[in-house]
Image (cartoon, rainbow over all chains, first blue to last red; front, top):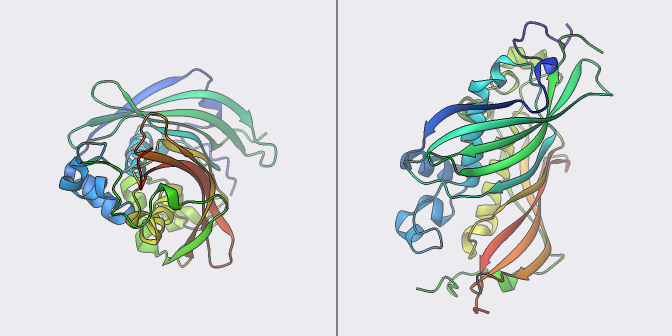
Length: 156
Length: 156
């Protein structure tokens, strides 16, 4: 069975440099922040309200990993799950620019920066994406870039 | 209350360029992979065994975000929670080098690359760390670098 699966709604050919899309809406609760942090990042400013007050953050903030996960989930629901996405080799320039606090409402913004065929796998193409998490004040709370692999509608 | 909290066992002054430490041991279960992916990254190769078999991964693999979280949690237990860590502005060069599959046993390796005082906050210092997740075959499954902020035992 070919990996270039034409049944996906969005394939590599559908990404165009300069495309911008804002998607999702998720209000972060204190319970979510605590639950994630207890599993993956139990630093005091992520799991202990009283201790967090005494830090430079002046209160509980979400783990940066959690913020990334929330932004990525909105991208999944917004376009990735109906695409031929085949994952990614990594991320560059991840920047946590603003704290995410209980009650903040996040959205995900993507911009297509570059596309190219994949030399080693003719059934796949690469797409360079800038990812941003925005809060309810339109502040960028996290930004990053990556190359994603996507199945092609027509193999090269 | 000063942020340069001498009560922490590990402060900025205790990081030295070239220090290497390997810590933790965590065997990843299929249930964990599915649980994380359903929350944050429900792409078919992370949530659906049958579909995953048909992709280039030839089976279920952990979300890269999940791998990062597991590696980071071992770092928390290994040294961060007894340190004066004050978080991080971001990450560079995140690379998912090998798939993580159910049954893989991960460890975390850190290497101290650089340290410097923080000009804007005399009670903090910066530490540049290389992070690696290793599997049971000593293969690097994920690598990244970041600058962490740590409280100083003695304010500058």
